[in-house]
Length: 474
Ligand code: NAD
Image (cartoon, rainbow, N blue to C red):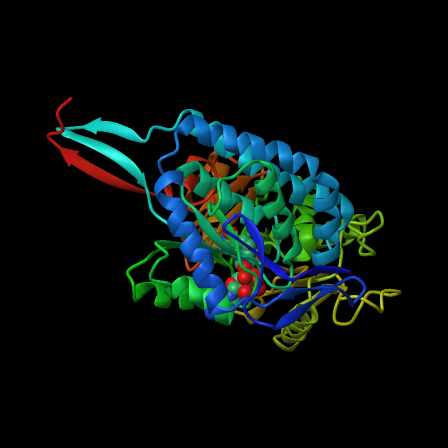
């Protein structure tokens, strides 16, 4: 049983000032795996105070010191590989191989990438008669979701540490244990006291507390749009800068000259990875009418290659993270049927033989119209909507007919058409065919998918304020 009832404040594990605790559930077994303390306003105040006290010295550390620190963190992170994989599988339900190849690796890569970016990063530049200095923004409050327990935390923390910003982190309360291991990693790497503080708790108390705290200068939030709005409203009261990484309803445009089997595999992998609980997942698959039937057959044929099952065993799709998420996905599948979309495969209920755990059937709808609820709202589960088009211009119009703009995908052969589509989708990150992720590229959304960018040097810039000094003697 993982009973982690302490918060990490000012370089020490401390008791909560409150007494409330919360159960943490393994979504594959529905069993309690441990408890956490639900932090109080007082706990948060202590964490913010520790970060404020760390600010003058941490923000003045040299670039070389921070590169070395990030490298040491990456080394310590590697040493905790088995623990991280185990905990992610337990708290999130992610299959062991995905916990390793995706979750563990992404967290590691952000620390390595931040160290690399910092080597070429300039905190001072001359422009006109000015000296421009990029100064640490202050104390940062970080609020993260449950779907990538090491990736979302690490990308923010790596950027903050690279910029010299002390942080207060509130991880998602339903997957809190990976962040506890991160705190242990920072401690082992010799992070100065107060530069990292972790307060567990609810969005209502600690989340609202962070976004409205007068001594926090910047809030970086990843999560749902509804909560993102609340964070922005709270932050407005103290004119706090916010970065919001929110949801998506990303399109994948299959071009007429695409290899249909390859395109179907890419589409299926999007709903399969992390059980579809990925903000950048392509969930609207736009297919030319001319190849609709072949594409549908290819999707049906390839889906069994992504088996659903016990995440402790060899499988690809684990359970959804929680009962609430399971109910939500069921409701969307019911809505899709009610709206008149054709259920190609999957549907409501649990997959055969998986009665315990929040498992769902990978579900594909076809004959979907872009104004249906299942095509407009983020489902956050393994549900695909196939929408047809006649011309590339129509496909682009459908792709952009959404309030979101996080990611976009295009699969095909003709370079000119690929270029046209990639530059016409209004979203922060476009992937052409099966390109690999690029951790030096900016990550973030247009429109209601958010404000700001993470990853690479863009993620460091978020934690800096440019200051202009005119006429400084040289
Ligand atoms: P959520 O918004 O419910 O919760 C995110 C975090 O905010 C949690 O730590 C939660 O405790 C906290 N929170 C809740 N209420 C709060 C409040 N009033 N003030 C401040 N914090 C509060 O989101 P979730 O269900 O954990 O995650 C799923 C959502 O996250 C999806 O919409 C997904 O698209 C989005 N997401 C976006 C990205 C991205 O980079 N764009 C990445 C992953 C997830």
